Amino acid sequence: AQKVTQAQTEISVVEKEDVTLDCVYETRDTTYYLFWYKQPPSGELVFLIRRNSFDEQNEISGRYSWNFQKSTSSFNFTITASQVVDSAVYFCALSERLKSSNTGKLIFGQGTTLQVKP
Amino acid sequence: DAGVIQSPRHEVTEMGQEVTLRCKPISGHDYLFWYRQTMMRGLELLIYFNNNVPIDDSGMPEDRFSAKMPNASFSTLKIQPSEPRDSAVYFCASSLKGSGNTIYFGEGSWLTVV
Image (cartoon, rainbow over all chains, first blue to last red; front, side, top):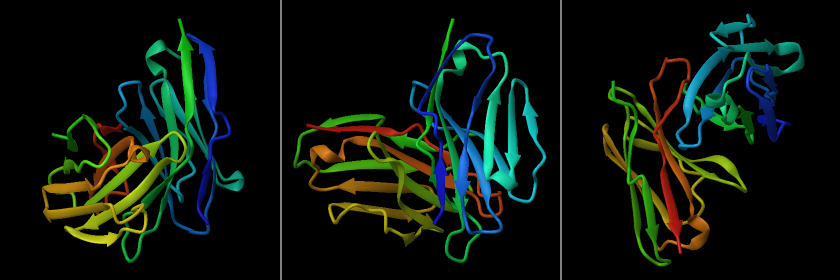
């Protein structure tokens, strides 16, 4: 069965610290997608990144970077020089292949609440 | 471009009342999803549509819940009669086949049943 585990329930850091959010997944699919979403205090779910299972290159976007390691089934998210505005709940998600389609139903982890203190 | 639009953003209703949540997906998207978020169960998929046709409603908790998509730009999720345990945030989301499975979410409808 597909499953996403975010073992860190809450993380608290001081502004400018680097922080890594862990994500471990399980799937029997050979082709899948992994995602990170951000849910700020206002409540909306904001798409951050999508990673194809065939592409293990790390990705960097400004202060955000993602480390995908298929060997360990992990897709970790690092925020460099954290800021108060990064305070949010972050969800890792796995795309499960739907019936005869290539648009996947998302399996979400339980989320990691990040608090960045000034 | 407009994102997924949901209404109402917040609703407080009394137990037993009918609740209707509305969603307008991103124009051109052919998949529409309804998710529910609670503290106990996290984010869970209730139902999804492809080209306005319900494909999988196995996540719908019980017969009190129903969803429709009469056209490509509108969907409703109805709860009748509502119960306090239905209190949650309900998200509508949409995606486009071939877009790498990226699903875009609306801002959510925060439902409180008292």
